[in-house]
Length: 234
Image (cartoon, rainbow, N blue to C red; front, side, top):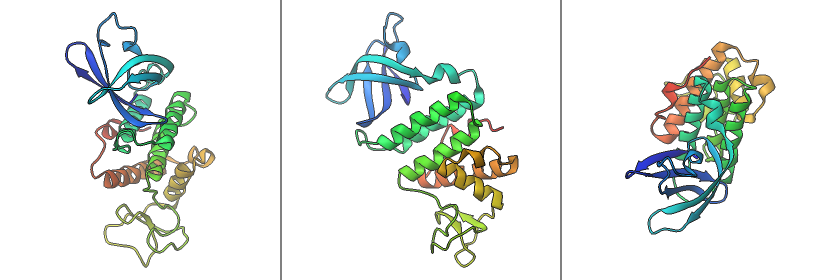
């Protein structure tokens, strides 16, 4: 589940990313009452099995079964919790059309939350990997090796968000960043899910990569994520 909003005195509007029907908004009646049997199951970070009934404007929730409650495992770790919040917001922003199938985004989000809970990799790396891969699934794959304009194989030394990523010397434009080679290597590893490389990156490369990922995401979404400035980086 991505988000919950209060509705009236006892209801909620819930936003979920589903496997087969994309992003869905529905009304969950009475779930804010202490007597509700499903209220505790309809919380952000919940991986749930939900049944709906079709309504005039919004569907209604009739039944909820918990598959995994990631929130309960993330809430006590600020860095992982804030990274997870940024994932949920990104998933909602990258699925703008309700009920448009988004199987890859769904699988990517579930996998990203599982990785956060497992704690095998730094939460900042997990988040940045999720962000670049979700952008790629949405059709905005950044280039971290070949020139984003002419396709000349890299490595290159320039990066520009509006140009689509790495740029060769001939295509370099004013305002381009000049990341360290190690940063480009880390970015490519995050996009490919190469954790053997990503986990060994030094702090400078991680910070520089995070800044470039955030800038690229903001450019593509046309505004930044509200949750991203709250993320704690190690």
